[in-house]
Length: 200
Length: 200
Length: 200
Image (cartoon, rainbow over the protein chains, first blue to last red):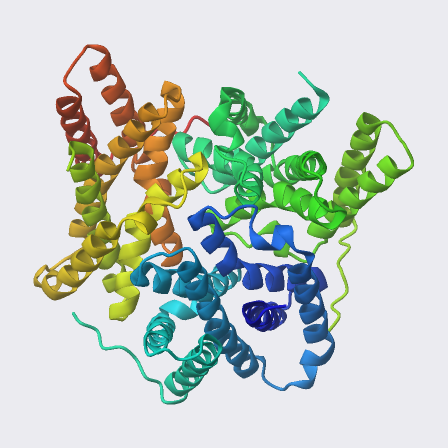
């Protein structure tokens, strides 16, 4: 199993957990929790695969994804209630998923020899669309449209990765650093309530 | 015309009627009703075809679908007001559509030689996504996320079909029995307010 | 650069502006405005390309679209506040985008030798889906579902174009006339509050 697959599974797991917490917060039944986990975890990668025409999409070809999501959702239901506040944990897993999936998306673009701008766009789509779907289905305002910087962090992370590759850093190390950058940046942004200025 | 096409047309018709009733309930104009019918009836099959990469999607290749939806929507507008309560009728047609389209989706997966789990997933997507789109567009909480069991019924129906095929039942008979199971189960679930337990 | 590409860029620009105004009305930050511009401008064409299986979708292959959207969004943020009322301007650009993109969609269908009904459907999808996505993401009732005639205008415009081609009018002239028809009709519809009758 190659390094990128590990990253993808970790991302799948993170978003599945964030989806499960969102659903539990809204008091959905066990099945609703599983569906929300599923949609959140596959949303970004599915839209990316559809846009680039890489069908059947990943999770239809490979049962691992479905299994990971199922385990993550059930695990969250069993042990999640030990946590006092869902929202903080939800947010952390969302940040983790954003970082991991952004890199998966950028890397997929590079493999297809797409231009740097498009690679970063694919990274941002992969990283953020699952969460958008989760929030729209649950009738929440998507995280990506809330005050704190969200998608910009993903874009900067993608850019950082491309730059690190330019200076001949080992690809795997560059991946880990860029993921760390996104997760830490998201945490800082929310902790210190950093917001983009309105230009108008 | 083969048996599966008949099932597909009946499902299209059922979901078109459920979409029309939902739109009439929200007082949309005649055109809004037709669009809602259309989106509800093609939603599930379209997402399935996109995911497996079977494009152009079905209703673009074959005018029958569009014609059936148009007739169903206009018929519902002309005769629907004879009914006192839209919600019950809407719910029955939704249950019928769920049953019929689940089987269409499972069968499509079998034709592509996909694994049993994926076939059932395709069935559930085909059966439920049109209704989810209808509910999201009208700003209702999707049926699939309400208290009563919804998607689980579709999954069980798909499983039943695969099992009946294993015991060498005639494919068409197995199809009819599985559809009946889904429709009757949905009606029972709502009548007796059966809900999945929360695991958390 | 051929005539249709010019129409497409103008449409992209119009929808990007309408998306930016919608986002500014909801007080999103600069990045939210850019995302909304983007989603509104590419929504219709992306769904059309996915449905007909023309992937990778247009804006992934050609950087011009992204650049046009970025400039339109930033321009709207810089100069948009000069306008007193966002809603009127937003509505005008939406009407313009509807007209331009409807024709792009119909023409794409003709190039693929699809039937007239399907060509018109592709035109309506291209013209209206971006706005639907914009409104769903911002939690507004989609324009297409409000009281005033919307999608019907797009359908009539598509029909007009096919008729004008039948009487051997020059394709470019027919395009311009049909776009004008849609834009003017939309303005009249809203000005005089024309609504479709409810058939029920």
